[in-house]
Length: 334
Image (cartoon, rainbow, N blue to C red; front, top):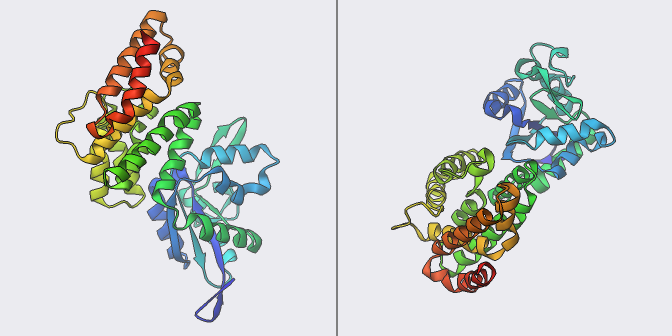
């Protein structure tokens, strides 16, 4: 409990799970209609560290791996409720059992949950919509974690957590480490030297390949990525002007896109993408021979064309950074 206006106020934590993100407003209303005051809530992509705070007591069991898997799939809404006897009231409003049908039909878990469990590594994960503190000990731990590490978490950090997890899920951690992180770092530096909008550049750098990552198809991934990035940033509360600028960057970042008259932020993304491609040879060969399984000559031709396209994307203000990398590629390929 913490004092508010001189009085001790009890607080507890709740989390609307990713599978129910599209219903989070209805669930928040249901919590409020149950007489629960919600002073703060946040949209966030949960990390393994967040899950440990909520479910660490389950770690010895197979359930922990299942809950970590399903709780890091998409956006969640997490927050706190406060008031007298708050843990008891929160449990009563949501339902005592993790299995939806075992709760009173008026509870949130019964109303919004599903009886069809998800299966992960042989473990059933029941689709009840809300995790919540069930004891005051849990409430103290979870509320402290929310206040200290989730509330006010920068959108930049949330997007990075999300993108990293998506690459991990697809066994493409190497691509995140050696391409996405490089693009972000290069773009960040260029944003400083070119006096550009840093947040626009960072959001675009993190999300520029989001469509091809999820679909596995590079064709049209600029336009598709712009749409997906817009949805994600809207969910996180970005303003419309920022979202549109990020979308324009992603829309024009591919080598086939028209780059005439694009913003400095879009030029930075194109340049950072190109320089990142040129800076780490193993990744280009990995895509040609590992992912596409091309024969020797076809793979070499694919890499050579990728190098040329990447260098052609670089804006004049970044050409000095790209030139030595391009020249090294000429030595390798010729």
